[in-house]
Image 1 (cartoon, rainbow, N blue to C red):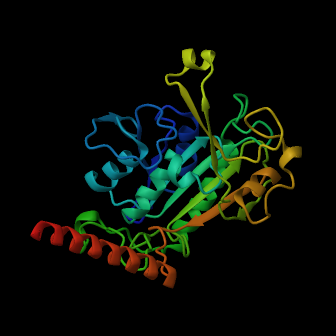
Image 2: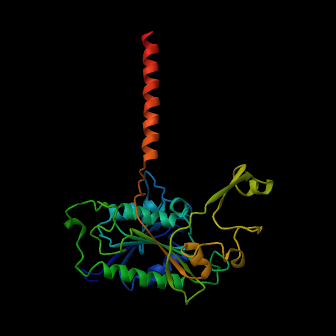
Image 3: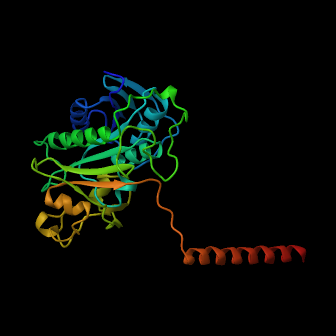
Length: 318
């Protein structure tokens, strides 16, 4: 390895033994020096949750962390001496589409954690166009190859300057500074984004990348659990996310025919329905909002709060 070779941190939420992570590891090694820091066990659906303390074990590819995907990223970017140019999270077993991903997906949560800590990231999720979750007979070859090509491009576009060792930096922390851009001095260049959320098919080798936006169509169904469900899962109530257009079908996931015209062409869900690889560029932190209505709301609450304090003070004087 030369001093100028790109350095990639690879993590996931399915656990260090997941086939999707192994597929990415093999492909990314062709374009970068890859270090794996992944959860010791499956951490699907934990979002960006972080632990107060974790145990870390050595692994032939790097390290395993007894914690969440975000724990893995935090440990790798702050405890290891390697100065990573790019974080790749995946390859997740199943798609992560829609705005709900920012809170639910451990795969995307790891990428968000990386972006906040100053390193651009790719969150990679694999889907099967008809079965939703990739069946056992399919491999992660296509998503892994697409990831390699994407990673190679963002690393090359970041510049060919020699890699700077972590202990030679001026800032020490490498945190996000100014304008919300996490790219900082990393060699990976995601254009105007801090992270990409990618959904790639396992069953469409002739797919194309498509720039998309996460679709805002999230709901939750809350109902009492049946007797059978109580035996299988703890809890008297079921909280089931409803993030696909379910129409009138009885199953959890819709068929292609049922959702073919349900989603706008610009959305990540439409790309998945069409069998393409969706790329949703995202930025952190969350965009702040300001308006006259917000000014009025806060001014009114402040007025009422002062009035309550004055009333309480007058009552104390009496």
